[in-house]
Amino acid sequence: MMTTGKAIIETGWNLDNSYARLPKTFFTNQNPIPVRSPKLIILNDSLAASLGLDVQALQSKEGIAVLAGNQIPEGALPLAQAYAGHQFGNFTLLGDGRALLLGEQITPLGERVDIQLKGSGRTPYSRRGDGRAALGPMLREYIISEAMRALGIATTRSLAVVTTGESIMRETDQPGAILTRVAASHLRVGTFQYVSNWGSVDDLRVLADYTVQRHFSEAEAGTTPYLFLLQEVIKRQAVLIAQWQLVGFIHGVMNTDNMALSGETIDYGPCAFMDAYDPTTVFSSIDMHGRYAYGNQPHIAGWNLARFAETLLPLLDANQDQAIKLAQDEISKFTELYHYHWLTGMRKKLGLFNEDMQDESLIESLLSMMHKYHADYTNTFRALTFDTQSDNALFCSTEFAQWYELWQARLDRQQEAKASSQQLMKSSNPALIPRNHRVEAALDAAVKQGDYSVMKHLLNVLSNPYAHSPEQTDYSTPPARSAHPYRTFCGT
Image 1: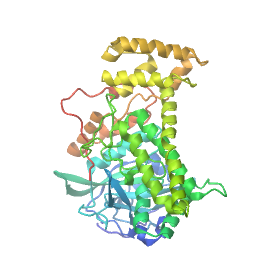
Image 2: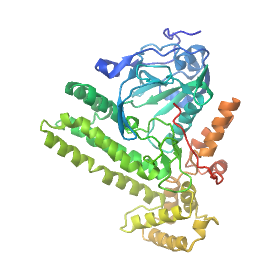
Image 3: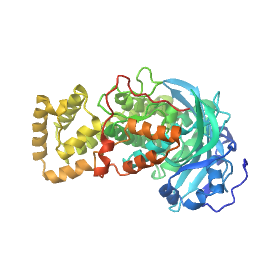
Image 4: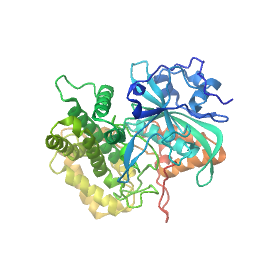
């Protein structure tokens, strides 16, 4: 049955709609477009429970109808958000072209999180798109976002994936699907770019006040709220990008509309994790010139933040020159903040508790050797953690032997015992990551064979990446060398 009536089953929805109370130019009200025969593929039970939702009720016919957009939960006011963005450096008008915000769930702990349906049909911002999503990319987002959370990295999360019973055309016919995404919010750099370009200064102030209230309410009385907003967004992005780099994560499409002001990783399109260490690594099929390569991510984050700062200029100071100076002063701090968090994280990956002037040289020497010998990023640090160097080219080199002596001498210069260093390394170096070939195997089994067991087992082993348990060993093996580089696609 295809309907957009209100869901009547008691599922636990406790929705508010603060975003819908903002100026109407920020969004368009619209219901999801119903689908033919929704089927629940995977439900995130623990996330559902933390949201105050009834897991069993979500699996009922009525619950699945909500996750498919065929029914609207009580209290929801579905809308598509408007935003803009620099896509590969080119500015354009955008918006939720295949997603709808149902509302904001108020959790049992009093937290407010967005509930969004991704793949729910065309909106006024769809341009030439069909507003739908294919099963493979939605399952990819589910897998990677849950893996990121397990790695301790701020991220949007996936509540559920349902198939629609309909096919969508990409390069070939693909099974359609809808993902339910949970986020601290969907406020983006691109949201501010949209209002800055097509709204008034009053609109911009309303949006900034809303963002401060929603994410940065700890601002002290007397603090300039808009300068504080800029400072806090910069701080959160410095932490986030450092975390990406520390685990070898490559987002793939760091457009300004894909930078969430909350500091969460958002929009898992052509993302992937690096195998052999190489700062020029690019996976995205559309990143032809390496703009969003692994080694460029910190620079791009700073560039995106500069675009955010530009939108705030009218609010920072009535004098434009003074506003520009305030913004530039804050943006200039990003590189130092990022470097601090990255260097702190790298010290932990090497078991270092304190600071030494030679640490950065020690770290850069290791990374240089890893690049030279095509060493696997994750497994190199895993081997160092357990002092189990294998017979690969890196560990057999004279350069590494010399580096290893320097590292051991550095460990000896700190008060903490070697056992404490190892514990620090175990908690900082994951045993495994979502290896690209493992993710593809799970997606192939699901999409082509209807076999979801491969994906569920993968999710299970990824759920505690710092456990270093025996069952994780097989999943830590890199893929076989290939003449064809691995490529990912945005999935739109």
